[in-house]
Each structure stands twice: as structure tokens, then as C-alpha cells.
Image 1 (cartoon, rainbow, N blue to C red):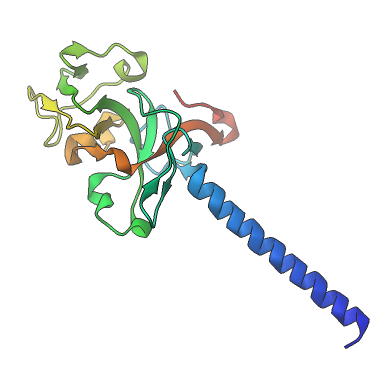
Image 2: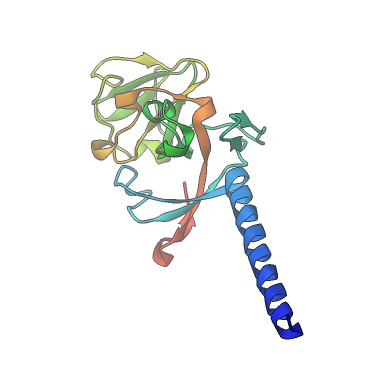
Length: 200
């Protein structure tokens, strides 16, 4: 084999090795630190529009290793009013690689009492006035949001609602999300260019 062919094979091998390393690094970063998420539905309009692409931080609440089911400690815990990506209970029972992820607004934590009345959200007997949540009209739909029925969020669980209540499949219908099924915090919209903004 002449020197020119050896050089070509060496260069090809270097390219392949570089691509493999880049792929492994991308998977590592996506698993542990961040996720790019595309909004599929109208459930979070007008905060998030279908087609918006957002950056989701996994380090806020601690990244979870999917196969071994181990979570690395984050530097904060989910707070009421934050927009969060998670796995709902009907998906959490499926194998990890086929689970669908949802994005909604966290409105209640473990131990909270939740009531939807005349379009308003009440937590622990007090009407929510935080503009992020108070701007939305909430409908009494589903098993967990019947008219006049107050529900209690179990410890270690979370209750999520979509900002566009009329067209959101959320905790009103399927109940509570386990803390182990939290994926990450929605940070900002990076596409399309006209909608680049932090997510409130």
C-alpha cells in the first residue's frame, strides 16, 4: 500500500473517530444538562405557540439517568408558576424510551389544596393572583377539577395546568405527576426568531 492511500485511510479514520466522539458528547450533554423541545399543541397558548422551539434546563432540578433511574441532585426544586417539561402518569408506566413528555405550568405542590371556581384558581383557599396564572381562565373539566370539588395534591407529587385551559390535557384529567418524572425547566424560546424570549 502506497503512502498516499495510507494517508487517506488515516484521515478517514480520524474523521470517523471525531464524529463518534461528537455524537457521544452530544448524547451526554442532552441527557445530563439540556434538551431542545418543540411545542406540539396549543395547550400553552399564548405563552408558547405550536412550533416554538425552546431550551429546557435539566440541571435546575437535577438530571435523571434514564436506564438506571438515578437522579443527580439539582440546585433547586420546582416552584409554583414555573413552566416545566415532565412525564405524565399515563406515560410513566411505559418503557423509558417511548414515553411522551408534556409541558405545562406547575400550579400546586404536595400538600396543596386545589380548587377551580368560576375560572379562577384557588390554592389552599386563596385565589391565585400571580399574573402568570391569574391571566388564564381555567375550566372545570376532568376527574380532578369538578365544579366545587377541592382536591389535595399528595406529598411528592405535582399538579400541572395548561395556560390554554380549554384545549389542554393536564392534571385535571390524569391527576398528579411524581417528582421523579420531572424532566426540566423551560427557560427560553429560541425559535422562531420573532418570538425569542425568556419563558415566564
